Image 1 (tube, rainbow, N blue to C red):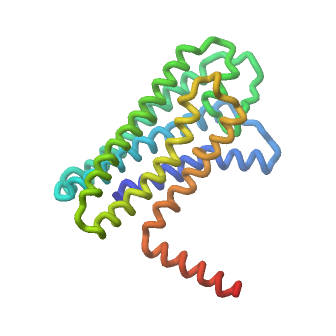
Image 2 (tube, one colour; image 1 turned 90 degrees about the vertical axis):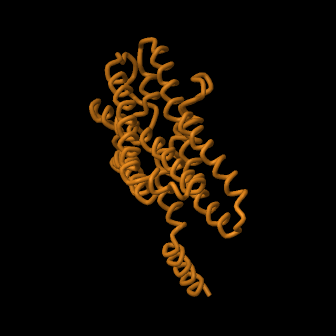
Image 3 (cartoon, rainbow, N blue to C red; image 1 turned 135 degrees about the vertical axis):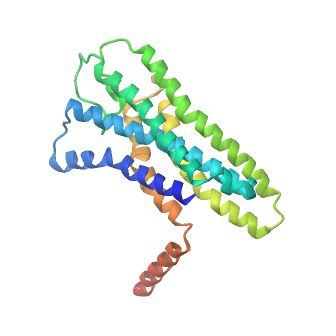
Length: 255
């Protein structure tokens, strides 16, 4: 579990680094320009991190399922080599999906304004500037969202459905509490990750607006990768103890 968590932290760090530094530089310098190649690279790395993290979250749900429902088989089903294969598979599938979208979006003709109505090079925002009919690509993008969003989400839902069933039938109250505490952090991260993506990319185009897309994008580009380490750290007793001491100091100073 901690091996997968370390990879999730790395993905979150790289994920937020694809958009925030450039956005902060543009805000502080007053410039709002990015090169065509830079836009393509930003789109590629963003889609790679987003897709890979979604698949890794599904792997972590399977890890929790094995740990709670089949604890005696855990060392064999979730060996280090199994975790490595899950991580490599997440990176490969996320990269392939990202490469396909990036190559297409960089080769379509743009005959309208080059001003992207977004704070980063989002594929759907760039697609709006194209002067050709891209209905085939939009259909493929919808299928891609189903494969990388809905299928992993259904896998997570199934895993946790069985986990909750197993926890409910535990005789030990302490065991139930520990299992719920372990799973609640991951479920919170899953909700913060999938909800904005599903709301943005699985809605019909005629129901979407650029202003709303930018607001929702703040959640999955900035807030979610920023909150993930905090959510998982709250399970650590040393972190909780440090936070308690800090708040105790503030309380004493206020008094």
